[in-house]
Image 1 (cartoon, helix red, strand yellow):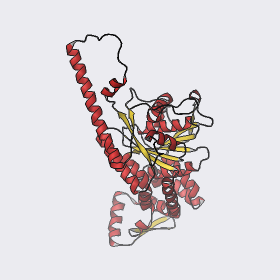
Image 2 (cartoon, rainbow, N blue to C red):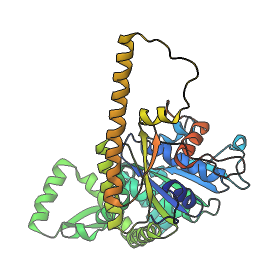
Image 3 (tube, rainbow, N blue to C red):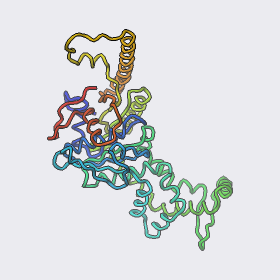
Image 4 (cartoon, helix red, strand yellow):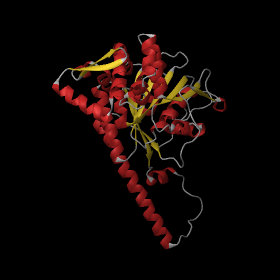
Length: 391
């Protein structure tokens, strides 16, 4: 990310939230990725933007972070009145419903009414539409394409699954296209329907052997459902491929950007480095690193406090020794974490935003605002950032 000259990473990211159309938040499990996505969305909403936060993470932690019991596949508006956002600012949230999104896609793009009924009624489709390898991530890309054109929202913040699975989000179209491309199956078998009965012409000896095994373990009905599925989808394949290309173009566009979230532990940082390298390889715009739950150095905290008034207090020597050990332990953890985080800047040339560990989990909008303040600086009633909480 190329920020303004002299600007800190926090100031640069805060500025990007005011101009980007799509922000994709990625990170490994347990690093506060979903909370970060929600906090960034709330931050932009308080500064006057119409924001939608959408999660494709199957764990559905977004509702908890927002203080809600549940979210649906439709945008739900949240009440920000108590925070006094700038005029026009709003925040909505939703989760991806893979099955509904897939059904809507079939409804919209099936070549004919007969094809639409055939696909939606197909038993194979009903069983795999929400579980097919790559379908969850592909449907997220379809939904992202739809939301990017939704004039109700100026910014869409997308919360993704843990990092290695977030790569699936970028690569899912290729995998799903490979599955749906019927040409791959043609070397094996070619389906024909004659008088309502399925007959199969086997193209090769290998195909004949495979067919016998399939019939033995899966049954002819499964083969019939599978054949109908591929026949019905044959006319939709080019449309799937064309829209996947449009999403890739959208994610590479200057209106989009990726934020990588990590924890201070080495495994999480390694994942962030790996994903950063993949983003560069795919020429995706990178907005910044956020490292959550960083332990502050107690020596710096003590140095920043004013001296205590009056004389010292006598402390039992055994208690003093135990407290001193705790102090050294915290200092060791903090310094080890800072050394590990420093590698991000060395290896990538990007300075991370470091957020201190909070006293408790975030489970409402007030907590999300505190997270946003810790990341990017406090926002006053007029929407201006006042200061950033030190990490």
